[in-house]
Length: 223
Image 1 (tube, rainbow, N blue to C red):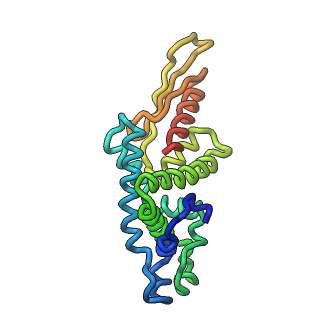
Image 2 (cartoon, one colour):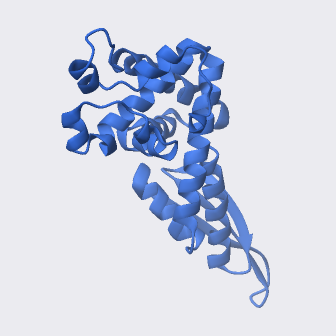
Image 3 (cartoon, helix red, strand yellow):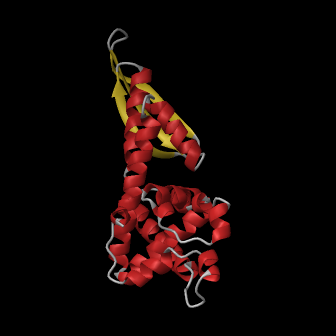
């Protein structure tokens, strides 16, 4: 269970968080499925993400914060996080779900991830649950960004990342700020949904925009 990044004091909570309703129905009537913990974990995750985004992006408008939060708590993102920490190997499933590919079904993975978050909260407190969420998301999205960025220049990597999460519009605003025609310095700012996400300088328009995109990628990586 080391991949979970948390050591439970009450292992019954972890067992319940990993118990899909199909397993509870097929085995022991006394077993509780993870549905109630999923309900709790959903609320804990929402609050933790809201708190983190509010503190990280002090000048951002509510619209952008809501969009980023939605992309971080949606089913596909939660399933990605669950897979990254090996949750697919830990879930208890009924025979039918197991044979029909339930172990890798997005909805089951996302629900289990929320249930584990709820279990961590009950086993500790909100601050510990928040730290747990930060750790598993940081681990997942560092790996994810490295995979997206590998072999690509930053502008392409940023475009791909945004399209796969919020599908927002990326806009570059670039001007020559100093130097001569033979030795210019360009300054570029990159905006996502009209929100400034990065800036950079370079000896050409392309290099300035590349530098700005790299800053935006690094900023998104720290969500």
